[in-house]
Image 1: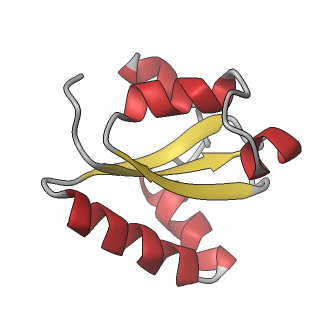
Image 2 (image 1 turned 180 degrees about the vertical axis):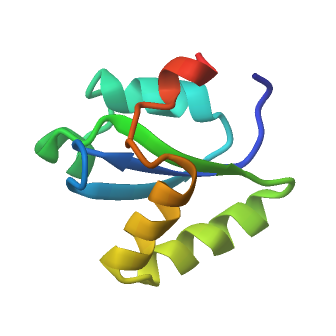
Length: 96
């Protein structure tokens, strides 16, 4: 996968703790989270499963979308995830 701006949601498990991030290289970034190479929230709370992502043409658009999603209430985020990934499977395996 080429470098392309993306917004992603990681979860600790089904209906678990959520993390929203933005990156220019989704596969690499999620791998870093999975290996606990990223200090902070995802490492502390074991948030490693890629449950949702969106690809964007421009990084500015991806950053705006990340900020928008972070302001959403939890149920809206869950609804967004379950619309495309109702079983909360780890999508990273499909990308990698």
